[in-house]
Structure formats: C-alpha cells, structure tokens
Length: 364
Image (cartoon, rainbow, N blue to C red; front, side):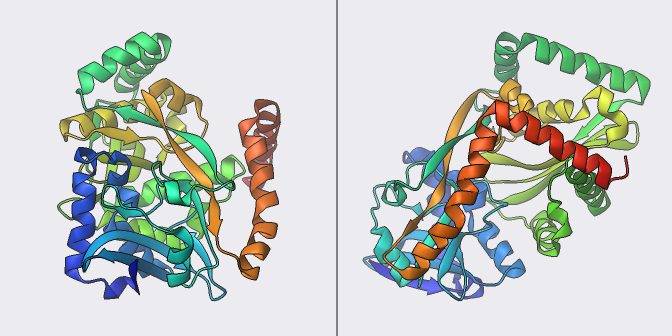
C-alpha cells in the first residue's frame, strides 16, 4: 500500500474532492454506511482545528487516492478514531472492494493501536476479537414522510397518538407551533447548548460542553456549509419561544442526531418528540435516505426507529508494548461500562443513582 499521512491543513483539494466523491457514490456502490457525515472530510478538518494530533492517512492505488483514514495520535503512538467520544461513525472511507492490511496501515501511521467506539459496518480488515457490536437505530425516510408515519402508526400506535396530541396541546396552551428545519441564529444554538449542559448535570452525566474544544467544534460545524455537508440546527417554537432544538450534521443522504434537548419548563408537552417527527419530515423533504438516531438504548429511539445499523467498539493493534499497555488499561473499563449499559437490572439502578447525584449537584 502507498500510504501518506498528512496534517489536516496539508490535505490538498484533489484528495478532498476524491474523499467526498467516495461518499457521494457510496449508496450506489454497495457501501451506504460510508455516506455518514461523521466520515466526511469536513468533520475531520473541523476536529483538526480544535484538537492536537489529528492526522489523515491517504492510501493510493496506481497514484490515485483509494481510501482515507482520519485519526488522532498521541506522542506514544496511541491512536483514536477521529472525534472519539463525540463522533457516531468511524472507519476507513474507501472505494468499493478496497482491501487493506490493518497492521501495515498502523505502522505507516506511526500507531501501535487504533481505538474505535463507533466503527461502521463493512470494515472487515479491522474486525478483531476485541470488537463488540452495538445497535444504532435509524429512521428511514427515503419513501417519504407519509410512508414513515404510516409505519409508525402500525408499530407504535399509542406513542404516535400521544405525541401528536401533546403537540396540539402545546400549540393551544403556549402558542402556535412552528418548526424551522435549518435555523441560522447562533443565539438559539447557544440556548440549545445551555439546555444540554443542564440536562447532563441534571441526569448525573459528564457535561460535554464543559470542554471548550467541543463547544468550539460545534461552532465550527454550525458555520460549515459545502455541497455535500452541513451543520444543521433544527428548532421547535411555540409562539416566539424555542421549546426544543437539535444540532447535528448532515451529508447528501444522512442526517445524524447529535445534540437534542428541550426547555424543561415545557416537558409535559414532550416537545423533543414533536421535534424529532418534524426533523424526519424535513429530512424526507430534503431527499435524505435516513436519520441516524445514534447508538444508545433509549425508549424514544425504539419508538421512532424503522431499523438498526450496527456500530462496534474496540481496537486494532500490532505487536507493540504500547498496545499491550493500552489494552490492559482500557479493556476493564469498557467491559464494566458495557455490562452495566446492556443489562437492565444493572443499568436502571445505576441510572437512578446518577440522576439522584445530578439533583444533589444541581441543588434540586
């Protein structure tokens, strides 16, 4: 393999165009999972402006770019998928049928180990015993919004009836309901981040927006617009008040749910669920194939989804002392967390404890 490794600012326009072309054609060539916006060059470049150690490996065949691997590298040679911890799709973006030797790739990238937590399907050379798959629900809208709603009425009749009723009540009690699919007001984005931070604290979770680089990344992506990629803020208003909002990223075929939140003052109206239905309608109108709800067990995702993808977490490594040390450090932590998350008899009490701690921390 002919492998070159670049800093984000060193990637030339020809390589970026080739990368975007692979994504644009992915659904036609049997690799639709590669159309995810988290695998786009725009996302990798935005992370590169916010984090150190970002690199992009370009693999060429006959002098032409055939595959792209964005990653982050520590001084010791520990590699992490680009945006690990906040990205919902990771892997090698490649031409159909392309095969690679993962250890040769790691060596060329100066890595002893490369860790993923959302490796997409179809990355067989990366599949090792350390990888474990998890469901990632999606909402298919390629047949149109009416077809999706008909399916929801069949599979989740009580859920959809209750959600629509609450949406109408929101309009009667608070003000006319209005949805903006692509809101460009940064003030509303700031309000969404405040809601999300409060939600993290209220539920005992770590506040992602306490990390300045994540705030910077969201801001970068909010202002990023190309022919095949955009950061998108969607907002549900009641009267003049924003009551729920979501910020995510989209490619030509996929909208990724990323940071949804709502004003808790209007919780009884379930504005977040109404927002998700409007987002599905907007995605269908835009000609997208599906909305990716992201990995994670949530009741609302089970009600909204039409099917599930699989994403995997784990790592690929070559024989190296750093790889052994990394595995010894990371494996027990991941195993414990995934055991708790996957078993309701463990997850539910742990979730209650986190929420109780969140209320104490918030003074509630």
